[in-house]
Image 1: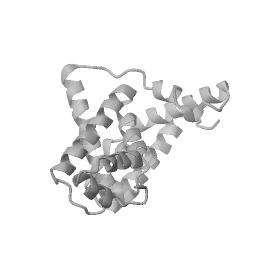
Image 2: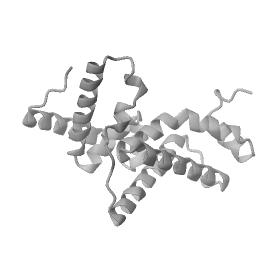
Image 3: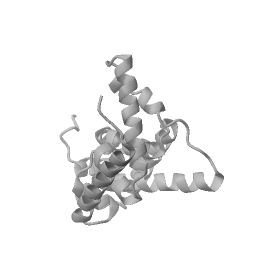
Length: 194
């Protein structure tokens, strides 16, 4: 049986009824968006792996206990769980005083950059590193909308659902984030082209 054409709700219903293959299909369907969002926040692949697994353990537990009600918002719901686990991680890290490892580790090991020349990869990595550092200068709400939109691939409707704001607020935060990034680039006289 091919599950690829099943809606999220059909997969959820089948999983709750006992078809374990359905949760695998849901994980495969959304793993890139969820994992990328987590990784870009924690900046450490092994920690991102743990949070990703915890996210879907929580998803499965909630589905089994019927705590999820279909409103056509499965991905925003999963992203909210991931977001909360990232926040929990940072609270824990702050309490025990850990520090993050090298944030460029993921970029340097990315298979998407493997066909470029060494020089191209170095330039690309530097640009990505610079942009990532610029995003860190933004206020938390603006940073979050940039991460969800450009790194998580979410629509503004999904962002609004995940962050519990209106679509107009999400759009406004993106607009101000872009304006602030342009201002920072101008002030620091940064050139981000190859």
